[in-house]
Image (cartoon, rainbow, N blue to C red; front, side):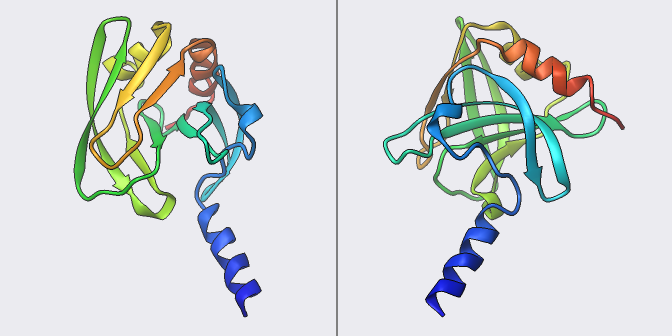
Amino acid sequence: MIRVLTLFAALISGALIAPPAHAQACGDWRAEVWDTEVGPMLTAFVCNPTEDGYGVFLSVQCFGADRVNLRYDAGGSGDGDLMVAFISDGSIVREKMVYEAMDHALAAYPPVDGPLITLLRSGSDLRIEPPEGFLPGEFSLTGSSAAIAEILANCRG
């Protein structure tokens, strides 16, 4: 019975987005196909390993032709709209995000030509300051412009 419950929990936890399984996938931005609740989806992402070996992830996927699905997976939990600061090269973009409990991530759906995606594509390093209860994140933006451009080229309305 415990084996069945463990298998069920593992299936549920990876049902929505299955980020890279190993810390060696972390570092610079890249684009690759992830399994999602709607099937395989090209995803631009970066991660920073944590002591537990999992890591803090930031990912971008298509959400129609003019928006993206931006996810920050940094542990924690919350309710309602939460303000998150994205800081790079002296610029700060504050984005309203919502905690999506099913995959334990903060999510936002910003426009592809908005200030947040512009910041992600143009800076050198990124610091994310989420609300209390979530891990802050620090990422390189090396390769972000090319990885995000690759997914945007495949977005459809």
